[in-house]
Length: 454
Image 1 (cartoon, rainbow, N blue to C red):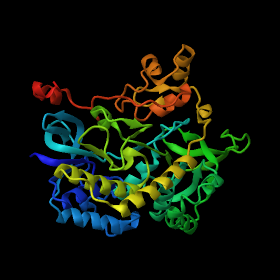
Image 2: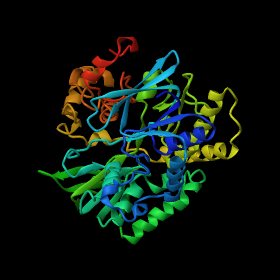
Image 3: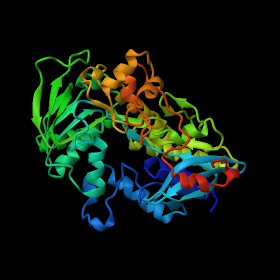
């Protein structure tokens, strides 16, 4: 069924955009790969699990209720279990191609006059010795298990890395009955203090998480990092160590923390695959947009983490602005002023920039990688193999990929590109992929030749 605006991604940005556009008379279709709207931030447990108080695992539950109820009362057409793999430009606008259901063996096309990308972000996890052991999960993965499956990843956990996601993960695990042995943050508190004015709006949220850590007596180790994860068949503990002012591990500061779960995360990266395949310009790792959240490709808007990591509140503001802009442009009018949303977006972007500047991984983390540390999990490429490629003259990700196959596996470098770039001593470069996810050959073969996808 054709639509005016296809919104891809039903997280905070996509929901806000869909509701704003629909309220202004636009026919909106909202597509998401999950079984229900909400995204990672508002991830809900399946109805069959019988959760009595799902709000206990969420921050901003009332905002979610307003979005949920607004969506139910709107004319937005919601297509869940739709895994978008390609957005194709056509003479009449665009066709959004999506694989259906968990099997993802059949594809459908949704014609649209315009497209709004709210594709979110994904976690960045830097490798360390032992990070492939069962029991080591991403911080977001641990949170997803709690929110979506009402399952604790283990009995005794260490939460480690850097970035604002670690706080809610640690407090969420503790509230669920997990003994959190430590929250290990590589950032020094004084780095956050330097950005205090920009972070003023985050104080209440941060204070709530700190209160949760204190209530559950969770030790916090700042300016520390995980040096190694231990275990044979599964995780039994981790070694952590202090960092000096230059980001080097301080000799003699190592300590062992027994645990059966390590939730590790080093920030987020924007999902830009669909934007790149459409030819949208990037600004660093994020999709570049103007004040209306328009990309440089006519008819394409972007909002939320895809345009820069900033959290749910910023995603909501950007989504609302993008939805209003798309509705006005589709109606052939100029967008009306939205001073409150514009003001909120500006303040939240300042906070996001401050957090991004303060919470960066230790610059010398590659020094901790032993030669047998797996860097590319899909192709089982070790740090030693990458270093051999560098000795042979490789100086960038692409050359390392050609010599070692790092980044050629199922995830197409999404998990390992940052690590390979770090070992090579160069900045990560966006990978131009024709499709946003693996597509069965049968699906491609069934595409009509005139669509240019066969």
